[in-house]
Amino acid sequence: GKTTLVKLLMRLYDATEGSIYFDGINIKEIDVEKYRSIFGVVFQDYQIFGATISENVALQDVSKFDNNMKQAITTSLINSGFGIKLSSLENGIDTVLTTEFDDEGINLSGGESQKVATARCFFKDASILIMDEPSSSLDPICEYELNQVMERLAQGKTVFFISHRLSTIKDADRIIMMENGEIIEEGTHNELLELNGKYANMWKKQAIRYK
Image (cartoon, rainbow, N blue to C red; front, side, top):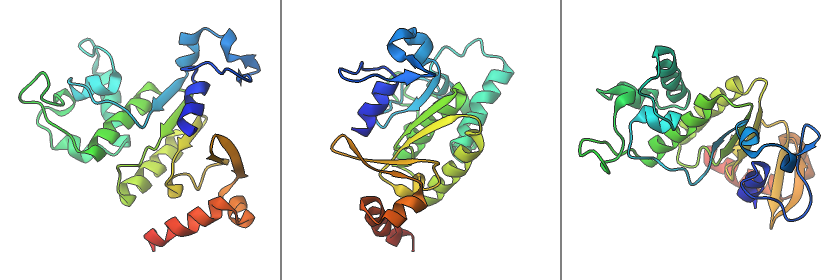
C-alpha cells in the first residue's frame, strides 16, 4: 500500500475514489508532465541501464553536458555514498555499467546500484523527493551517512521516506504507519513510542540489532 500511495501522489495511477490536491488544486487538473517534474524519485524496483554512470544518473544524453553539469553528476554520486567506488574507476563517471552492450562494462553490487539510483534523485534537484526503501541494500554505516546527507539536502524540500527500517525515518517530522492499506498510527517518533502501539513494538524489536 505504501508504494501504491506514492504512485498515486505522482499520478502514475489515477485514484478511483477520493481526490489528491497539490497547493489546493486537484492534481487531475494540472498538466501531468509538469506535475511529475516536481518529483525526484527512487523506487524500490529501480533499474540500472547498460550505459555510462553519468547517463544512469542523468537519464538523458550527456554528450553535450558542460563541466558544471558533469560536476553536478559527480556531486550527486558522492552525496549518495558512491564516491569511494567512483574514485576507484579509471573512467570515472564515463564508466559503462553492465556488459549488456559493452564487454568492458562493470557490474555493481546491490548496494552500489542503489547508490547510483539514489544519485538520480539528488541530480534532479526536485522540490519533492520520494525515497522508496532507500537503504534496503545499505549497511548501517552507509544508511547513517545517507540520512545525514538527506537532512542537509532536504532543506526547503518535502521528503517522503518509505521504509520498514525505522532507523531511516525516526527523525522525520511526521511518521505514518500503514497496514492493509490503512493508516493505523501517525505522529513523531517520540509520540509513537509513547503511544506504545505497533510502531513502538517494531522499534523495540529492530533496536536490538543496533545494540
